[in-house]
Length: 198
Image (cartoon, rainbow, N blue to C red):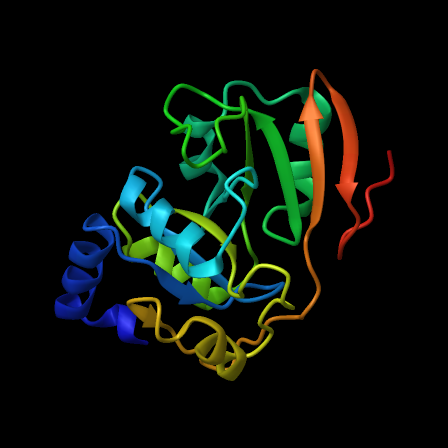
């Protein structure tokens, strides 16, 4: 993989720190992402997608431990869901911590987190400084999400720094389930790949 090349990893992190955006495969659909602490990167994502600023980005990583600092508190029922479905096609929305920038969350007091079950995405996060990306799907708003490398290149290839190959680890083509997890209440906002038995 390209992530095994130290010179490339250095270049990648330099571009991300300057507001660069990358595109990558996940277990659900293809995504685009920037560093969470890069306001320019977040702005670039909203611009390249023509995305409504009221729609927040979500934070993804190769490990839930990397995401915990961005969350204020994890209720017991949500912890059980994380133990069962992370890594996987589940996005959980929590009250955000002070570490999470408002420009990531559309200035809401919540943030969504997910740990995709895809070896290429995990390897990307391993080499990215901080190991976390602020993400959304690799498509223009109102268009279908990209499900293949070719679709990602077609959708955003000329608007991002890199579109990484999937190395044979394809996306499943179904969106993640999104659930709000506040005060031990679990409310499904979008039914996707995973069915939560509440």
